[in-house]
Image (cartoon, rainbow, N blue to C red; front, side):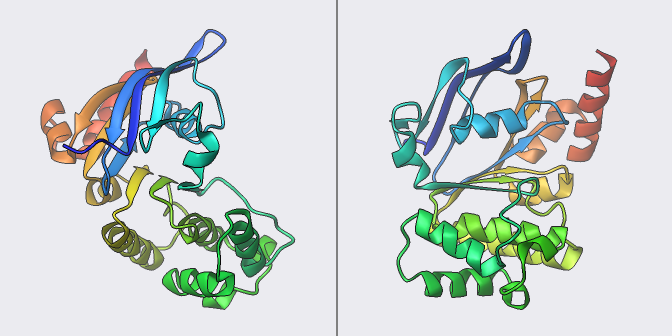
Length: 245
């Protein structure tokens, strides 16, 4: 098997006495969508922030493209991007102006053409000239996703990318991501609280609980391991167990 694009080994993050991520290890293969699943507070966001180099691990290592993130952060992050429902962009700029700033930060060429392409792909023509502060939550989600894919990353981290979208746009975004993954051989780390979406989008899933990996495999393998009918029942079982602790 080829070397994984992302290799996480014994990753731990403590905040004082609180252990947010507890000695987790996983890989993401080239062209794979890995689902990161768990209840609120399980360590998903902390893990993503460590993968982006935003916070420093207490212990363990992260290698991306075969390079150590701690030593080669700038080189690595030129080929990694991130989209989340929970981030914002400068409100005083239009959608196009925000995309133009990102394109310049990443040193993209043919910027207008790049913006034309991503706006068309994500059906954003009607909001291209709109001020960002006037966007709906769903439109903002599309803007943050456009920002992420315009740079043509090799690894894409997606934190609930469809959480604020209506069902029609959600379906279009999922179809786009599947095709974009195939055409670009893109590796994706994908989080969502929509269990059907996780089953549909993920090749494999790792399930975090209290900072530790408690299950790993395909959605069906995880369902069978816990003796439940579907992934939603597994999620509810583990979340309720955690609340009793």
